[in-house]
Image 1 (tube, rainbow, N blue to C red):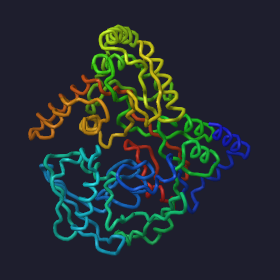
Image 2 (image 1 turned 90 degrees about the vertical axis):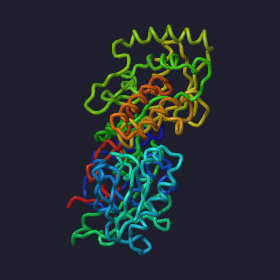
Image 3 (image 1 turned 120 degrees about the horizontal axis):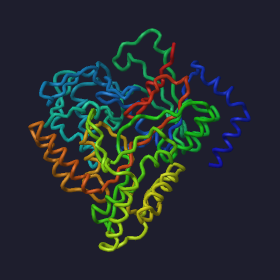
Image 4 (image 1 turned 90 degrees about the horizontal axis):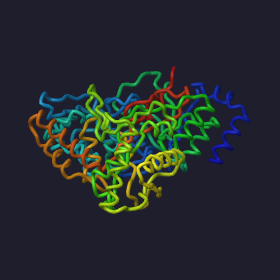
Length: 490
């Protein structure tokens, strides 16, 4: 924090308003981007990627489809596709282009690359989401078919994820080329004609290169305040106050992504009364979610008591809606006293949280809320053994299956519901849509009753961006593709 305050004073002393006015110019040769993280993030491999790793992977290794600045699916290696009426076959026509080594992009080479990418996801939540893919087939020429065991309405959204960027001989096909300069990732747009796409005469005039690096939040936000970078990406709740402070000084709005997903507490251990669902529910009842939003400085933040959100257009149906917070806490305190006397008091609960002022505020508020019903809360580092851990993830697609996979026994590190997993498996195996929907509803009910996850609200993702950056906008995917930001207004 001291570093940030010093940076702010330096910015003001140097005349911040003049710096910002100059940075609003759109004529710069490159766009400078800081992503909150660690310096190695932009260059990491594997499938468990940081924010910077996802951005660079998506920019340098296209999948069959990709995401645009609005978080919508767009063509990538496949320039068009069809879905059969039964939803069990997706047929992709690949563009006429080459891989980085000069060999042609064919249905067979894309099939091999996609099968390799899918195999690499083993053990991840994304792998569970992609289980309906039964077969990947290469058809004549530049055609790939995905055959499914059951309909998957959100398959295109999943195929657009950075982890499914396709590699040939270890390299991706663009649309940007990466060069490393120390800790800085230099990314330059590849001419469309090299990608098998039409190219206009003035294409190069409408493109800029990007300079991207990953830094801790206090350094990234200070550099934005000093006018050294055009955009900061990867903001989360734990560093939210840093972004809010810089946005106020720089007179730029904090850009919040309207992203659905999970933001809550997973129960890891079963010490004492933590082993009982009704005692875990008492904790959930005690939390003032509106107060959490206020503590984080977000008046419009959406708190929730629901493990899985209702379908679009349905009434919220929040838990305990017929009781005031005071009534909930009175019931929770009575129940907690019974829990301690009957099942043993585990003492202060250990909550694993990341570092940062936002995490400080979250812990203070949760500790206050739980103390009201006789529960003590101690904070431990994120990788330390805890009784509770924070789950903070943006939904890759907004359907019940994603939430149930994330909190299922295959991916959850801690307490889980085998009953919910069984109902989810039934939903996946059901051929009748009505039966599948019923099984999903039963899985949601079972997971809710287990109280192994205490929902708080929606995940918090934020960015800082100057006006000169084209192609940036908040979106529900909380993903901001780099090629869009390399474009220049002509």
